[in-house]
Image (cartoon, rainbow, N blue to C red; front, side, top):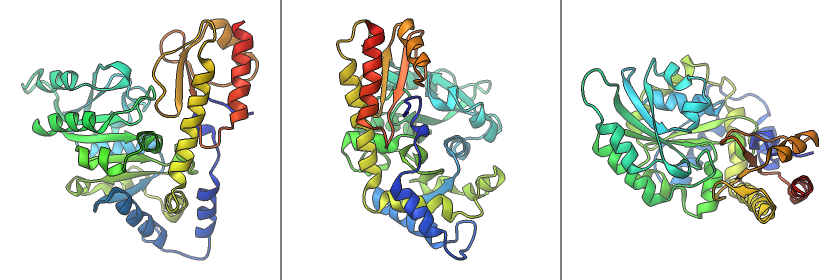
Length: 341
């Protein structure tokens, strides 16, 4: 039975697994000096069409937290959306790894920051008692599955840079955003003003591992030492980096992301017209957020389905992964229809 609680539930995609197994031969230099790590780093530079610095860490919490820590001093602050993962689901890790940089949440419809909301936080105060904003972070795709267009990112980045802030992008589902937007990754990252991207690997089908990509290479100074101190420097780094080769070399990352997005669209289309159910946000990536009556949610769980409920009192989140089957979507829809009746 496939579940819809998280795209983390999916296993390793075949391309990543084959690349991982291929790297498991003989001896290789440790700590990132191996050929696989070098090849993947160069492949990412080609993908983004720029000479960026690339680092690999074990998980998204470390990627985001260490990246933000590299942008801020302990007495400074990071502006984020009020439902951003870095604020609501990282157990204080961004503050911990930065030795105290404060997160300043801003509001915005559809999970997206607005220029006005960010400007208000930047200009609210400039006295010594206020944690001076030094970084702005946005999530692509957002926590509610919506997307920032390049012009929206550019407007936020322009505002941030004019006020001396660095621009960070949490790309846990960057692959899904890329597949949906249909744009070259450079167009809505560094060309739009993003300084550092945390490129999510786990949710797109890797066994483990995220890439931290510094487009502004000056900001990555000493980042390797941050990774080591935080326990994120893999000794057998090839096993973190090699699966990326399988994903990137023939476009598997985009094919799998497009499939996950298509399954979300299939689910959203099937929910239309079911009594008592409405979509809470436009489906733009691989997540479907909808309002479900309490008896329907209870009934689904009694039938074995797993999903999260944290968007309002009656909101349910259904995530599709690279391996989600149309039959699984249809089975879920059948149970929802039956329970709604």
